[in-house]
Length: 414
Image (cartoon, rainbow, N blue to C red):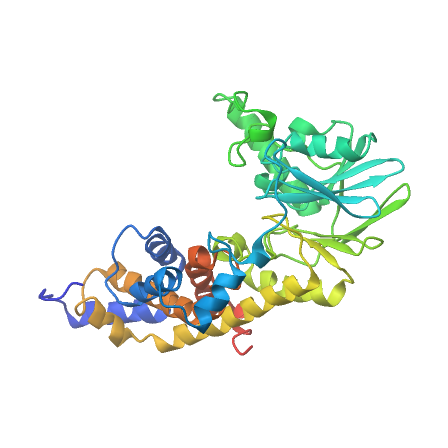
């Protein structure tokens, strides 16, 4: 708190401060709130963050059991993760788990990332190539078939999902992706060529193929050889995959991959079965599109099994419905926080008007995020994995989007 400090300011400067507060020009200030909200390395100047921490600690460490904590202990393991978030055990000697979903469609996971591949009578169709799984992807495929990999599908362009493609898949495979993904990868290849003329290429040779970091992949994925803009049906031998694009969500070009015979849908970085989404709504480029993707999954596809690209297990239609419920609650809590936090309250927190406008914005954004999180926490803390870790970041993204993005603002009254 900046109490006890005397500030000198003119009527003009105060008017400027209030005008800036009213405009809520967000992006430069969002990251300030993010750092304090997520790092937890500095004490806050308000009591709201203490409240969210106290709720977490008290529910974990309290020796007095009540109805809530009794239910929690029966539904969560020793690490505090709900049982519904836990997937199959990864054999430590293998480092991966592979299992048939049905009728030649398999999924493989290392516990952090997951993907799927389809065995046909003419070859294997592999989806994505997460570097964390790396060469173990090939081992998983070889466990169930000796067919060659003939087709590779990119769900989207992010290297944590497709970064190992160049190092594990054959060059002569057919690489398929949305046109926007091909354009992004072409841009990356062009940039790499320019870099190589002026400096040294990054060297990942000291990593085993299964351990290449997702953030440092020197071999860019091959540029797709087949692209589409809206819908593409892939027929390979006796198997079919339908590739659909419903607009921007996580990123432009992120596609829905549907196996109709197996009643299985794959959509990456949108829905996280049993878990809260990754930070900031999984870094969604388009928050409105990200939200709408949930409804597209539920309304447009007949599926029993869902593959989300991350974490420990497969999903179901119920998992999608649960995350949609979480998103609805997040919209409502974010809208409430945006409306309830007043400028007068913030000026009091920082000790009155100040020429340091960033101090006011920092306090404002933190307070809004924390009020949103405190409204969400009691319902979701023990229902999804990772809520205590990432809830503040979800509030940051949603409150910001509701303030400045016209399309998202239409969702306020859910």
